[in-house]
Length: 210
Image (cartoon, rainbow, N blue to C red; front, side):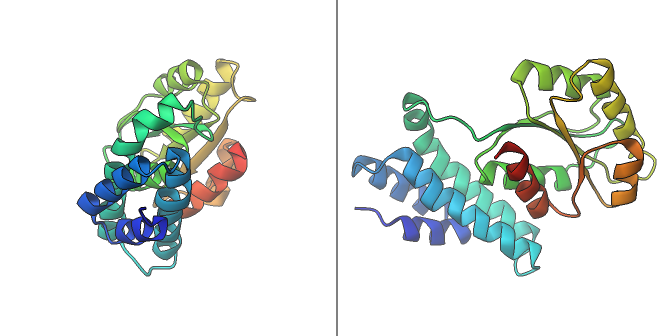
């Protein structure tokens, strides 16, 4: 019988191969896929998120832990889908138009998925209307915007306006973040939530979806 705590510890260390094997062992041993997901993989990602926030681990460690989580998810996915497991919420994510930076966005994606949310990642240089289309198509709870440049962060306001024009502004929570972004900027453009880091973004997203 595979030990969920062991899976969690190996995942935090980024041991993708071992995580995958132990997840398979656990499934074969009759442990519910949802239990493995919640109590091993998501629990581990939660710990990594807290450590990242407290500067105890850094971007490379987060990325290898995420890779290990994805290895475990490969095993669990067919069982989760068969069991009709629902994501806890849906977020449309992207870096705004004119901005090609993706490290921050990718970290947010990892942290959101680590909370059990489904993430529709639109990539970088994303036009306002694309966020709106994706949010409508997927029934998203959240639109999350990233920008690393002062010249591109103004695009965030265009996304807020596009959501208003499309009539979905009341249905979605617009979250923003990135190096130049501040709480006062968030307030000034009418976005809902600003967070200074990826781990906090995931916590706030869970409050929205919970």
